[in-house]
Image (cartoon, rainbow, N blue to C red; front, side):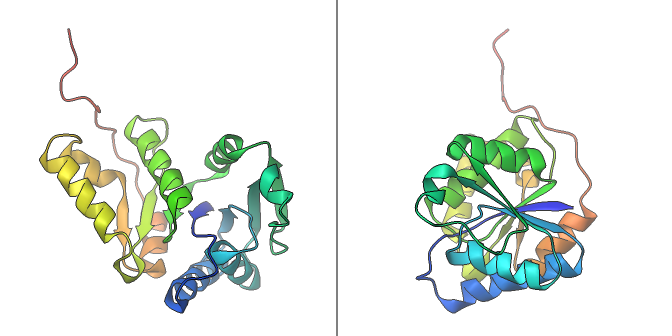
Length: 192
């Protein structure tokens, strides 16, 4: 299975974030999955790529040419695809992936996983979407989701669009056992 992992490109993180990324990469290799990620040689992106490669996983990095020009291309990918920009990068990542995982990350990680979640909400795909909530990193985001549900900005049924995993083992188990569900109509009431 091709699993896309969105994650931080920061090297300034605490080690437990790197440990979780390395665990995920190792599990992907042991389970025979292919890693698709942002293809950079920094942060959790590099940690998971190196770990996945060591565990026998195929690795595919997808990087926009602007990042290539900054010498940010990982040397731990079997293949690197260079795209014109971030939009093309995300499209390519979605096309090639069977599942999506978000490890902790910054604005880019959030933008990527929320776009995948929105596209699932709108029935453009029905693939598993997982947040690995390392050290409760996504707690504030999930509180925002709760406010969206309680104030009718989003339907309660959308809790089923994603899975919150405590760690990488739980994430991989969920993806491997995933059964697509029927999409819920997004709108509460559509004008006649």
